[in-house]
Length: 184
Image 1 (cartoon, one colour):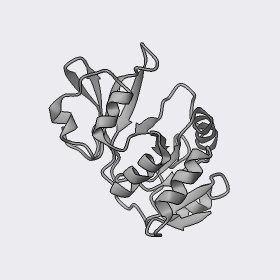
Image 2: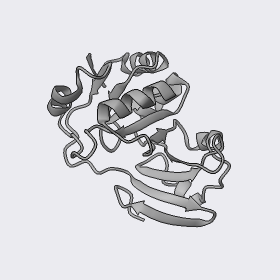
Image 3: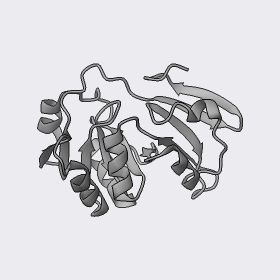
């Protein structure tokens, strides 16, 4: 199925499908992403993408304050000021002590509303097969994945899009893991 991001009910439609553990392809403020909300969708996305189980997904949250549900780490103000936006922060995972999780509050208000309506952070990863370039044209995304996901939200081509910058937080030390859209 395909819908347009500009459809008046697109955010509600997406949230309803996400709550039913469906896998969607959603536009973000960076690149298109596979998205889901539960461990079951995590496994489905890995199967579709061909991604190793050891490589974690980013979790998208609807507001900067929501990071407190994921970690007890203190996020430096200089990083929080960059949210919402294309910055991913790797923090300690409070649900799995000793583990880390990558978290991002996207700059796209529509996507943040989908997350709010779904009632849970979204697992997210770029739309491509593992080891292949990220797909940016909606026609290519449809041709490659339309039969494997429950819904694709069309927001047009994401030409020349840049992925998020990823930083690792270790105490007060911030390390750039991947330089992306936000320059640090």
